[in-house]
Amino acid sequence: MLPDIINSVADVWAIWLFSCAALAVMVYRSLHAQHWQSVKIFLSDERGASYALAYLMTFPFYLMLVCWVVQSTMILIVKIGVTHAAHTAARSAVVWRPASVQSDARGLTLAKEKSRHAAAVALAPYASGLKSHTNVYLGDLFYLNPKRLGEATVESIAYEQLFQQLAKQTEAQNSIPDSNFIKRKYVYAAMMTKVDLAQHTNRFNETLQVRVRFRMPIHIPGTGRILGTMHGNGLGYYRDIEASAALPLETPETPTQNDRGLGIQYDSELL
Image (tube, rainbow, N blue to C red; front, side, top):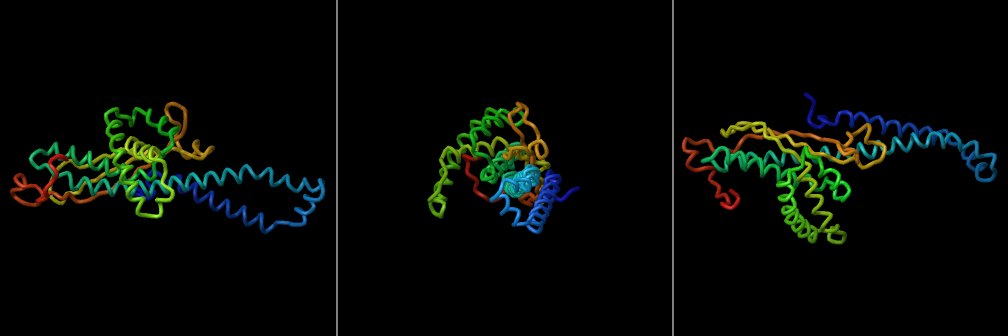
């Protein structure tokens, strides 16, 4: 099995390394073999235009490499965010899984809901807040759930308010984005994130594995064919990025666990 930092982005790492190396070689060779006298001739006489032909022919390849480096770097940054979201979702799931020991099904439902919300909050900074992306990708029936969309819209209001409160206490207060932009980021993260729990028993210290999958839009033109997949409606490319995390359950180890839960006073409204 591939290490989690490589899982689902192995080809992106290869393209990123190749593009960075190729750019470094091209820059080194161009500077090492630069004849500044040729530039002077080109600026003073039209006969020097022939010296620019080689640069004009190689510029498209150089620009393509730059695009690959930028987009692959963005994908790898989001991969780090998805890895963090997986651990965040796992921490939430292991606490909420035993929250309702009288009803095992209810505990599992709570674990799924809370872990999904935790992953969405963790991925909101990496999500797209553009209207174009929201309109295109929220039409994907593989992810879209009308009920979940309504819940995410309500949750985005609370997320935006918390964001504003935090930003006012930092230097970010001088450049806070539009509130609708922040809300769209959360809605996109909530709708384009899937959380799967691989363990369904509720026993003390048993491992619970969580897998998070996030659908990232491809931003840079010309890179989607290689780094992404065409969206079903043909309006853009996306990349599914996955990460997993496993933590031991916090279920109490006691013969009377069915009578007393974790010893934590859970909010009855949340249960």
